[in-house]
Amino acid sequence: MELTKEQQDIIRSTGNIKINAVAGSGKTTTVIEYARTRPEGSRILYLVFNKAVKTEAVRKFSDRGLSNVRVETAHSLAFRHIVFRHHYKVRAQGYRTYEIVTLLNLQGNGEKHAEYIIANHINKCITYFCNSDKRKVQELNYLDTVTDPQARAFVSTFYEYIIAQTRLLLSKMDKGEIEITHDFYLKKFQLLNPDLGYDYILFDEGQDASPAMLDLFFKQKAIKVIVGDTHQQIYSWRYAVNSLEQADFNTYHLSTSFRFGQDIADLASEVLVLKKHLKEDSGDTVSILGKGNTENISTRATLARTNLGLLLKAIEYVTENKRSRQIYFEGNINSYTYADEGASLYDVLNLFRKKRHLIKDELIRSMKDLHELEDYIEKTEDVQLSLMVEIIREYENEVPEIINTIKKRHVENNDKEKADMIFSTVHRCKGMEYDSVELVNDFISEKRLEKLKEDRKNFELNLQKLNEEINLLYVAVTRAKNILSIPETLLPDAFIQESPHIQVIKVENENSEPAKNSPAGNKSSTKEKAYSQERVRATHKAAYKPWTPEEDEELAGMFGDGCTVQEMADHFGRTKGAIIARIKKLELENFY
Image 1 (cartoon, rainbow, N blue to C red):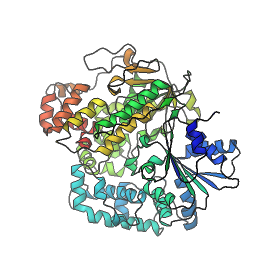
Image 2: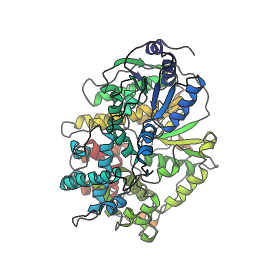
Image 3: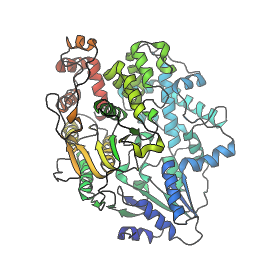
Image 4: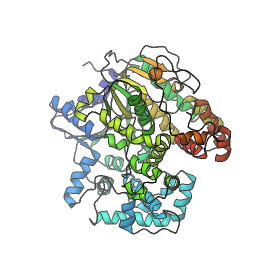
């Protein structure tokens, strides 16, 4: 293949460098050519993001006959150095909240479920420390990572206890008294300051590097190359940092995408310009040259920002399409219905149904009702459990039938290519590409950003989070090779280009007819819900009706103005529970 001038410049470079590469710009090809042209006998390490990328990279280097390149993930590298040598036993899924309560014999103060809330924060504090570059837990301020006011108040009260118990649990792992976690052995690897013994180290996906791995990387004597896309940083919730901004190396660029054409490239560029709303003069004028020219449509994907948005779209897909269709979820399908700590959607449903004997997860079983669980969620900022509660409140007893329908149509990993539709969140499809992509309408929009900008004089915005929200939309847009279907509300105002490769989905409000070309154009009437909903509507006229974009905007304004939940419920004719759920779904508490 003919290399671009940018690629040739990188291959001819010397010394430490960083490469800022737009989506689909052939960075793997560039890295392979860089490695191929190093002096004969050079020992080269290529660090990649996950196992799937590792497998593909090993094949590509092997095809080029490069036996002197070793491909590893950060964890696979650390595993051999730490786990084997110290004879540790690894706990694959990490520790659940109730297990930490038992292991540390945690004590509450009489407040409901205080010991479980403390355990949840201990778990997060361990993750924070293990991903940091610090040598001691005390060198970090865990409170800096907590944003919700109720959660901050709780953590402030128990801070010293949380830190002490975090250190105790880490000590138990270090001594081998209990199984260690994946985060733990990566941290221990960093703390040992090992010399990896390579002449060149190539670090992929540098924009999402953990400070721990970055510290280890910077300390190596090898010539270092960091590759990434500063606008694809979407893992700050895992305490990742953008190493491309931290590395004081010579900068090179890969600005030509071979994945998509110029129309999608222009849209991706306009999405990045949205960052102008976050800070004066911060709108990124990134010029992407699109040289993709595929006309093939063999893979179709639906991408969402959240698990909830994706599940709702999948539910719509399997219930509204008459003929049987096969689907596939990127990653383990169960991960979409289970929280990280093991609680399932069924556990939350059985709590809602008051069928406690059917609840398998000990934490959920300890809750009296859904209101207690929501109180726990507020004090722990547990996003996954919050999403589960939203699904249960929306679909109630229909959940088992819906999930079973989805699972019946789900194909196995080896048959992924047989799926009519692939479903994925943006985080799970990182590095993937599809011929046709449809975006769910749960990403940040320019209209929302403008509203936040207007209100910023009165409220402190989480600029880092909003920056990442824009990155998520950018990553989603750039997964498409040929066709991109995007809700009209997500299009930047400045983007007016018409193209057969960009299909705009008209967003319905509750009084409008579905657009003829939209996926909902053949929408069948939905099954009427239980009579209890009609009973609620007797006093709350808008209960259970879909929220319109205009209502969301109005709700955000009232929330920003400090209106009470009751005032908002009265205004919209909805229940207080519906108002609280909508506030959580729109993440208004994070934006204000």
